[in-house]
Length: 69
Image (cartoon, one colour):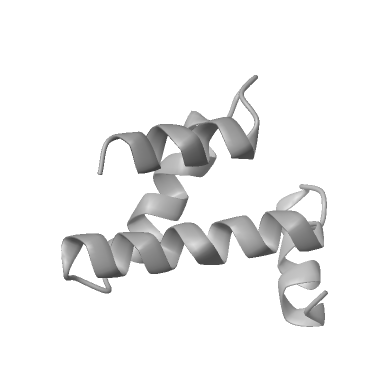
């Protein structure tokens, strides 16, 4: 994993991102940018996914995002 991201995860008191989580989030970010036509929507969508996570898996949230596009 990227040490810069790992250091921020530690500072925020959260678990490091796993490789599959990184791949999913980058894929969602790309989806948001291309689907909406605005690159600025990529980090905003990832933030919303993080807020929505709770008991739901990242895969479940990815499915929700894709089903609403």
